[in-house]
Length: 300
Ligand code: GDP
Ligand code: MG
Image 1 (tube, protein in one colour):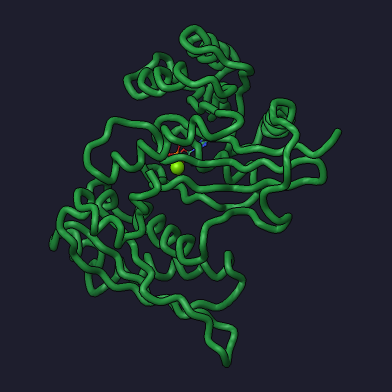
Image 2 (cartoon, protein in one colour):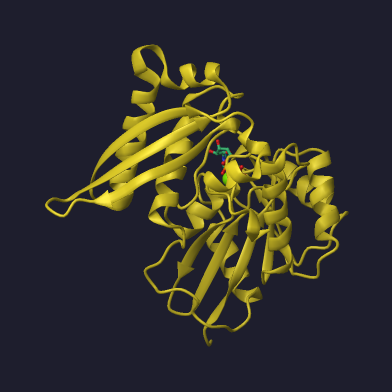
């Protein structure tokens, strides 16, 4: 077998486990995860390189009906990805018993592209074999898949089989990235995402969606093994700001500790993390603010 390679889009409605699955397949956390929908906002690449192949997974923000400019951006990124890849993994859940609006919308997009498609029924740990078969036939009736598989991104079942099937479908191709690269995200981007993940996991629903994180400073000290990171958390309301900071700063402290600990593991170096909180009203509907917060509008 000669070298095979290609780009594989991971799409599906929010919360089906796209980011968890990509992290598992790549073997490292490259995309943040939370129980909340719309955690992923940009497309994030996770790279798996072996002797005979290189798979570049693209974790997309999830296709949904846009509510503001930020979500418009997220949807466009996801839709653009569909035509630029060698294979699409369409993720649904083993517990799905009907096709909802979100999936109907995704399927209408899928039926318009010629890219090979695989139906991946995730969260097989939560359902019986019969349920899984029902989900497979439910979705296969409305869209043509080249292959159908059930997996669990939590316990890893069938994931080797999934990789084998992906390699079968991928064409011969070049090595796009160096062997040791697991993502093409910058260190600044990773830092801002990990901070955002800790916010998502510590705060109740309404606030996190209006959060943006800007890394103001990211620098390694010349004299010691330490990185200084200063980040500003932007939120949309004064009332949200006080919740993020918490009583006597306790919430911000907790978010800071969790983010620092994880970043120290990721970067393998001590980190000095400072967090600030500021209000930027309606930034999700303001293109300039979105650019400032790192969403590259020109990209779409
Ligand atoms: P995304 O929005 O599609 O990227 O979904 P995430 O990867 O952020 O996951 C959403 C939630 O589903 C998280 O709480 C995950 O821990 C959970 N999850 C993901 N994959 C599985 C799975 O295979 N089994 C179970 N039980 N939970 C999963
Ligand atoms: Mg995600």
